[in-house]
Amino acid sequence: MTKFPRRDQTRAAAITRENEVDLEGCKAKETRVSQTLSRRRAIQLAGAGVAGAAAWNAIPLRTAAQTDQVQIEIALPGFFADPEHPAMALIEAFNATDVGVQATGANYGASYEEVMQRTQANISAQIGPAIAVTGWKYGAFADAALAIADLQEVGGPEVDPLLARYYPWVVDFLRFNDKIIGLPFSTSNLVIFYNKNLFAQAGLDPEQPPRTWEEVAAFARQLQAETRVEAPLIGEMNEFVAQYFVQYNGGRILDDQGQAVFDSAAGIGGIEVWSGLTRDGLHVVIEGSQRNPTFLGGNAAMNFGSITGIRSYGANAAFDLGTGPFPAIGEQPRQPAGGGNFLGVYAREAEQREGAWAFLQFVNSPAGAEIWNQSGYLSLIPEDNLEPIPGQEPAYAQMEAGMNIETMWPGPRGLEAMNIFNEWIARIVSGDVELATGMHDAKDAVAALLP
Image (cartoon, rainbow, N blue to C red; front, side, top):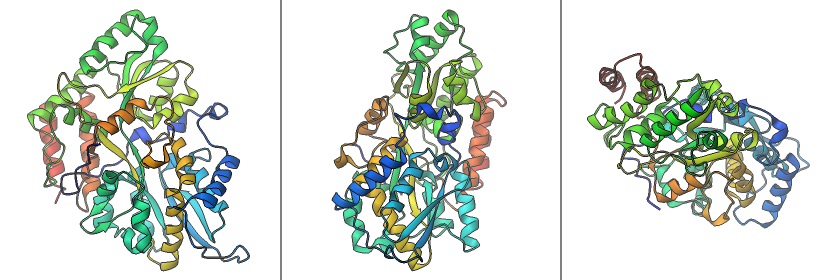
């Protein structure tokens, strides 16, 4: 597998990825049985993991008879805090192991940005959290602004054997000089989802997703001509998608020194592919919370976004669901980026850090990994040989072929810079500002906030 570049080669932080915001918005919970572990099953797995997994070796901090168990708070994005999400099953299964630590999952906001903002506020107020689900893109921000703990100080000599279970490249991503800023938790990449039934109605092969954006445009026109679908193509609107379009055209968002370079000819050309689809009436810009209902309701034929959508789409779609790799731009090589999150320890007190470490050990165990495998993210622990969720195959193929890293926006104002970039991209793709002018103006606005 191609390794992610090291931290000194532009990685980055960004914010609100709508692809990971409320994929459970289309509930139909009764249909989720095949995608969600039951509480009983999660606890059974926890017991099996504690009994048989060498990776789970937490030393009890309190005996079962003691009532003053260590209480730790885990900051979650809102879509993880849904009671039916595997994140909550993971926490409940950990609590069932009865090692003297009780974890509580707290909703810290709808996006990774909100999680970071509330985490920062609570750290200042000295009220936690012990652990926060931290977007990969916020690693530099968490290190610069939040004094995230070095995992080697939290877990001591137990850290290396625990990290050895992961792909080396994902561990490397969390190395900041001599510091390890967290435990790998989730990774994803972008794919294109499509409605096989609508493909068949339009005379398209339902087993052949579009491989290039030129094919996407041709398919969209055929879908418009042959079906009554309202939107042939929809998708996420954020910096992560922008990174794909820019990289797939040979450009970059930030250079190795962390400076904005997305307004290069290659960068502008990549965003032109995206905005051109909108201008031609093939890509419909749709408000974030409506994207999933629109697709699941059969009103959109193709939908590009994070593979994590497979959990909701697979459970709730009333049509045959297809998935394919993120389309290429002409003959340019694909350069997918990896998104997702890690578990950062923000606790200051020794007892809170010990409790956090116990939870991280459980997450790393085979029992914990099996529970988390139902989340829709890609497995980062190869030795467990976890079965992919049907439809994840293109995303796993992209990961195995080698991914770049999600842009990590540097400096204490990195979060703000990413938000500015998001705003400009939305205006450009929607046609509110001219492409080249918007890209140059966006670059100037972002550059003013970067170190």
